[in-house]
Length: 180
Image (cartoon, rainbow, N blue to C red):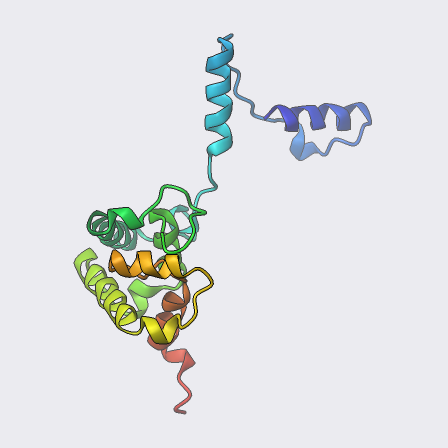
């Protein structure tokens, strides 16, 4: 907030402040200890942008969100070592919110006509098993063999790459059929 306020003050002093920037909302905190201020600064800077799936407009409907959340949370409970809190985690790990968002963006729930979190979970488990069975074909020479070794040891390969979502979204999309 303070950077926008400072920029607005500079623009106002130069008489170049656009009317839309005439009001800027800033949050003011009471005086606090240095350690409290550092903790607040750290918390603010860790904030991640809201994923499309969670946006009120353009995001998932309440029903789709419930299906995505239920299935992904259950998947996380089954493969807890393969889920990380960071949205920028590296393979073979996944992040709950990133996975929910990718599934939403690919329209998996609607394209596969899934009606419950359990149906989506069964589909995710099936895709994972299929990819696990094809691991030598899918990842014949991984850059870092330890990544694949870890995924195989935990029997969870959905975090190896995101191609499976795109592949299944394309398969499920009748508009991509070439049988016309």
